[in-house]
Image (tube, rainbow, N blue to C red; front, side, top):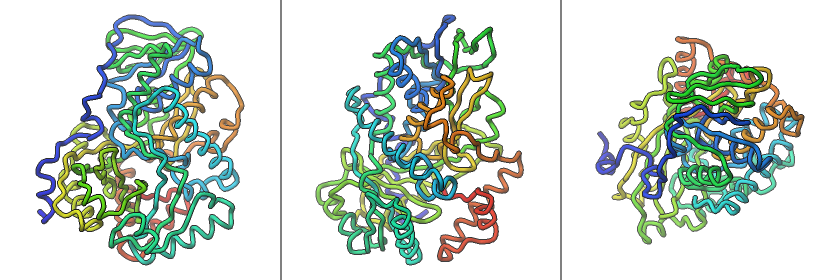
Length: 467
């Protein structure tokens, strides 16, 4: 128990975004045998963007989408609502892995974010889309030096366009916290959205464009059928020329893909709406998203009605990589997050949290999406977004459609698309390795950012990790 646990007394277990009277009724389940040109499996962002872009490319294309529960119910409706231009889980990760392609990847990411904003306008997606930018803040002295050096490196490489280094006074003029010592402001590369409403709007757009959407329809099996593929569902089936798999953390219908992802559970809190006086005490006038620079980092932002979403820090991997509903709720993490929140914003003492929730992130060993095909090019998949999928899934949808079309494009020519990450080892090695990495990251945060032998070895192997 801490002095801050009383702030959680009224918190409902469940995503604030999904607790919305605007939530649409689900589409009926599939109860017949369907045929189509393209079957999309999964009703999160990955599947919804794939179905919508397929119709944009060819309005006559016959597209079916099946979703095991309801569109947006999993990661797409539980995240922080940061829609980043980065396709590589941040510029540092992209630069470390694909230095020769990083300028192209950054350009493609910027165009992808512009295209999402255009789709919000074109399809009248009521999702509180705000092109606010984001500030990465330093909360320890060693992080100040790291941010300053990082900004200098980006300037040297010609990658600092739209970025600005902020000293302590400058960052606290943007958002006032006694813990903020410096910041790196990305003015254009991040938007904020209501993530559940984005998913629901994409579902509506798909239906309006002629996609046949079936919810409460899990795909059970995937098999070759003549020149195409066949998917069995509880009450029906679908035969399709091509299949796009957007199931992310849930077991992939192509079994050999499964070892490439593990579920890491992330948790978040949402406050009650702030009063005008409380909001003024923060000086948060420009509504930027924020994140701190620790290995075990927090992300935080304002909602459209001036609540503060505060999430991150704990990254929990369940032994065996199981995805279960009971992992979505973790009171010990909520109590920890509440304490961190009031340390960051002591001027908000007395504010209460209304919602507390968690969910699984599809994590791969390179922390950004990977892609591939199966069944002689008739099936495509994308997975492993590792927490920045709100924006990058649209790019992944384009990649899957390119792969299914057999087209060599600027996207499919990328090493990021052509090569896969290392798969995770079987248990108990996966759990042991992840636990040791988490312990080492916490130790680094407590010791001036110094990385121990384990973390340095992981870095050399291309497996460096943050939470």
